[in-house]
Image (cartoon, rainbow, N blue to C red; front, top):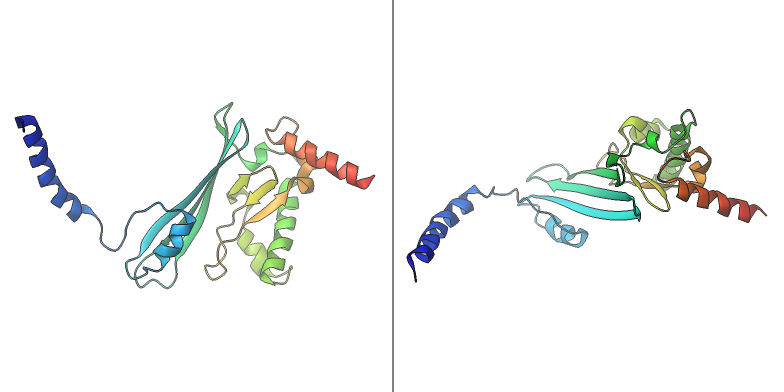
Length: 201
């Protein structure tokens, strides 16, 4: 063994104990798949932090990333979770906002909210007109969303933890007439309108 190899071994021997002490106890930092999350939840005494990440390419110029953040700390009353999402136009490098997809003044937010309220009310068995649904959907300015070929997936973060994570996909057919023709999702809206016209014949 030469002197260089010996120095590396001595260095590693010194670092391993230091690294072991640096690892936070009871709060492991992990990135897990959804299958692993179920296993991690069984270790509530230790606590956990996890992120379930999915990436898709609805078109060649559009990259969508969804992250479900999930954590639990020892003796907490309930787990914590929230969604974050990114919709990136790969041609321009721009992060897309909902208002970038629709015609100005089209009323898209009201249409999406109305659809989402009805879908969530049915899912939860709540009164459509209850303040609970409207309050927890929140403002369109703060909606997390993910674009797909099927529609716009809303990812509300303000519902109580007892309800669990909620997602609502608003089909393109619901908002097709409001999509801007220069939007990167216009092809989805156009396809939805064609299908609707064909079905009406």
